[in-house]
Image (cartoon, rainbow, N blue to C red):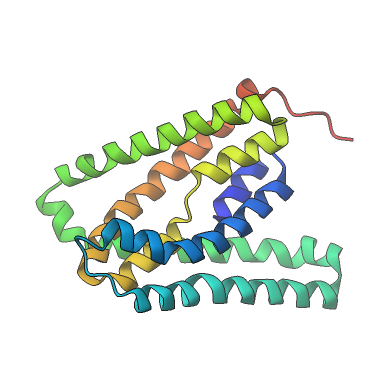
Length: 215
């Protein structure tokens, strides 16, 4: 997800590796999603594979291609330095606003449920904490054993950070009523993911050593 790149940068990791992991993950995830959605949900939730595939094309592939062509056009028109200094920083805030809007809609759809059953939040957040905790633990151990500092940080964030905005959009558009219920879980995952990533930045130097001095 885009969070992979952002948090890798905050922690002083290898941004090139983070970008590569993000792009590869989006492409492979798009190809694999119809298969594992059918495998995981097909027995309990009616899955329209044609609808899932169309949503992936609209939500993942088309924006990715549009972003690539927009970036290429801006770099050709204004140059790499001007793009990085003037144009590049304008896009992340817009993306953040979109993500917050989706999360707001997801929680609003479940407002009646949350008011009627406040314990639902606790029931949903416990498995989320377990999932993220296990992911952080395994990826950190593997990264420390096998990779230098920059690539290790990119691996951790590339493994743990989920593309929740895409998951949320897919669930709400492709699965109807069942998707609205899943949207609440994903909206709560935003809270866990962002807060845990911020805490991990604070402990990065203790885990992987201090940042190397700037050249």
